[in-house]
Length: 257
Length: 270
Image (tube, rainbow over all chains, first blue to last red; front, side, top):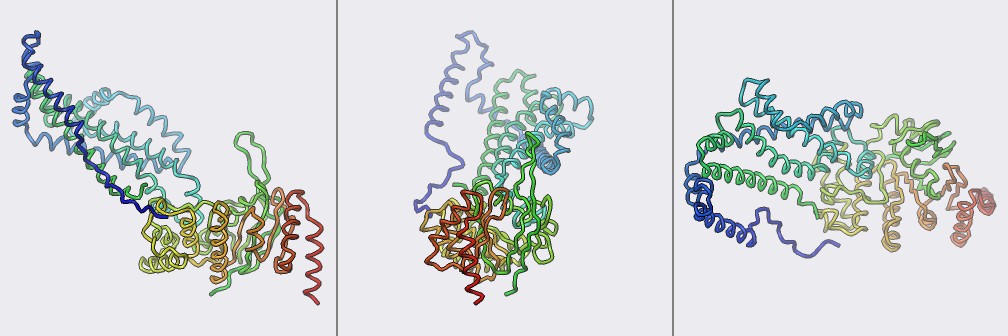
């Protein structure tokens, strides 16, 4: 029988009391430490007070946030499309998978820093370099996750679907795509976090705009408060993107028990 | 209501090769069978006798190694697309798509044949209502009981009003009361639609109560017995069950089946 109980709506953005308390304790500890720094023999600039960090946050240039965000979103979309297309092709052709899989494994084993250096050496355009690094790092993750998800679609469902004789496209749209949606969301969450970290390093090395570049400037100026301010922005950006994905996920996967 | 084409199985053989050992496994060996239009045929057999392979060959997902299955003048595997919307299936598990509501699951085959959206909805609603699910059209599979989910699966099969209906142990996992009720509904709907129905089952009660005809498969789908249920008086059903049981256990025809079948035939002729 259908469940009669009223389900509590799933909260996408939660901020429980415990989180608030632990953050508050951390802030108090930090503030105390910043005041005690000279006594403990730590240079005062190394642990700036919360007021100093707040002042740095107030001076943050929104254009750098927008640029970084655009790079992350653009690269994630490109990686997703590429990863999905490759996964579909590999799902359909075992031979193609046998050839492509070792290459993908190789790409995934290369450290991010190496990709950044290759990009700097190979490509003159800054945007292309950053895009390349992000796609080459995130694309294989999307591909591997999607391919695994496609392989995990229960045989019974594939059998049932085939018994109704769909075309290849119908089979993919009506069965495979909806079946892999939960994995796609998980993959997006993993890749958002990865992309934020990678874009920061890429911008740190080869860009003149973006949060990574601003972090590099702050480091050159020995402004720990600015480093903190930009780091907080990065973390906030990550949480915001994750929250958006979680909201869309909750909406699209409401069929789940 | 169009008459479904007859089914003619000739010299059917299906061999599988084991991936690990490379050894050949004969799932079906030289099967000959004719199924008349609108007949309700129950296939019984022990586990591993090739019933499910026969099911896959009938729906065209597997190609015969030798021999053929002909439906009218077409072949379910070779003319795969021809049978879109003409063959429908009900499986042991409901196999509903969990992200689709009952209504969306029921209209899936109609989407695949490209029917107009309004018509899809109308037809699926009609069938769900006929199966007593009018109140649950928007429910997701996890919100329905096992019996209700199987009803949706039945609605999904009937919604295209197929020529041929195949049910693979469709009621085997349900409790006896629900199974009996669904069996009855299934049979009534199949007769009303004028479909040829093939039920694969290991439950003799189900085969006797549903089938116009029962075929008993031995190992490698060897046809051990072909019984026209109508030739048996209801008072002899217990004997029939016993004789089929004997046939299954000994992998050879029980003489009582031959005797009573022949007697019934003679009586009919007279």
